[in-house]
Amino acid sequence: MIAPSDRFGPWASGLDAAERKARLRAMRALARVHCGPRAADLVRLLAQAEADPAALEPALAALDRLAANDLRHILASYSALSRSAA
Image (cartoon, rainbow, N blue to C red; front, side, top):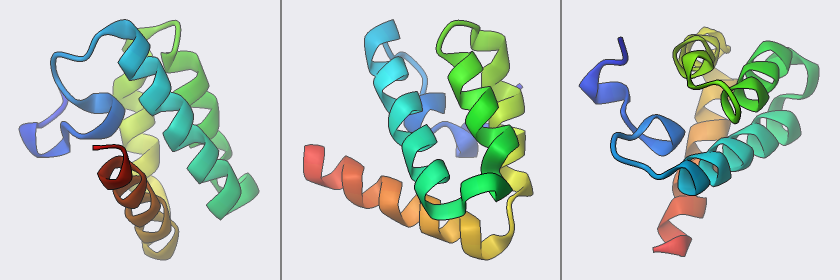
């Protein structure tokens, strides 16, 4: 189960399928650019989650396993991207 505090980005509640897919792809691109092979599990699970919602929870766990610096880069970039779209 995804905790309420972790319901952001592609893990937010109430997203339609197209919006969730767009958010998964944005997060996946940022992980690939910022972390390269260090985020291989996260990138794979985010891609899998586009077709299989059961991969959302493991993807969140993979995000949480990243080194603090990698996590900060991804989340800061995702936040800036989300702010500019609003």
